[in-house]
Image (cartoon, rainbow, N blue to C red; front, side, top):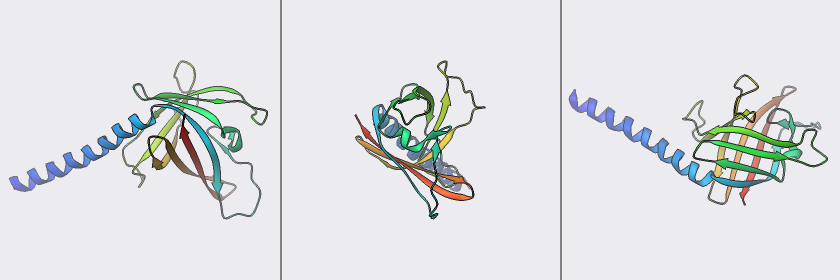
Length: 160
């Protein structure tokens, strides 16, 4: 019985350590300024859609935007500008790399906040899956349902 308990404890500690190692490594890699080089979506529909992300920002509006990730306090921001954007300015967020949930092993959670780092949309956040995370590039994706159609949004970043 004691052997079984020791074995299960070791498995638990090992599995927690692997997740923490990824989180630490991801936070180090993500720290700094990134450029969102491409924002795209895949769908099976042949219809034309105006897809919005991150609290109604048009998808094409966030291309070529600067994103800053500060890893010591898990805060960040992105800057929208240009004539194609209905709203311009700097938008703050809090980010985290949560533990596995619903099969998403490596994901990032962004929660939009105001200048005082308080949520203005009832603590709503956006969870995106990592597809790639290197020191100089990263790719996220997440799924949306719009008018009954499934869209997979893909965001490709390059480190500045």
